[in-house]
Length: 272
Image (cartoon, rainbow, N blue to C red; front, side, top):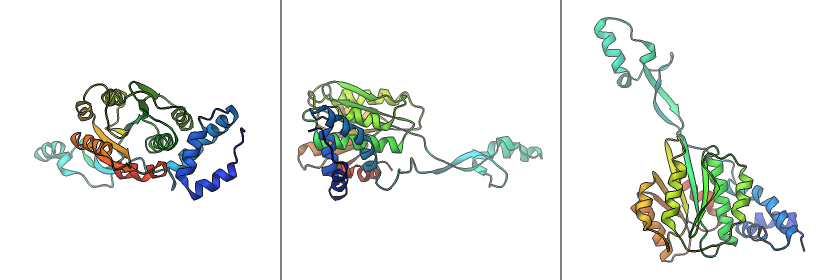
């Protein structure tokens, strides 16, 4: 009792990542205090590693947009016309401060991870949520939040709060299933979190089967968020169809995830 063989766990992680991650999630709720403490001490590192098996993903794709002109680069004639035209008509050199040129910018992105904790929440579902939190932290480390919901909504990490990702993972692993599913309330809470950010791109990443069993119709709340990405567990039942439908009516994107180790690829497929 109270023993954890780290070498055996590492071997299992290499052989069957989902089994290892699920085991860590289950041990984090063990009744034996020593085992629970050991599991949670390892969980953060293991979940972060699983979230980014090939290194931290790029936080965003760069794009060209007009910026202040600098010597040595081309002038963006269209964007600088208000400065160029008067100067040309007056026969003078345009003010360099008013000229624009092409510049690479990286979009600022804020994200709120919304974890469905209704019903039974343990094992693989719990591990999947923990890896999702680590993946979000890797992609948007300076501007993310995590909330969990059943019949009520709880904040695991607020948008402006500074917390180590290992602690966020640990708090998620302490969750257990609770209540019914008030999806509308969760989406409204996510929108409220993102309102605190100044980011130009605001994403709600929903980890749920999309089934709502309490509260208001979730469709208006889903349509009200800037950008909705929905991750649903593979199952092939009608609940997956509900998650897909919710993403579609909100103009968002949908992907299925087969287990905790599938999170990085699933998130990458949605987070373009």
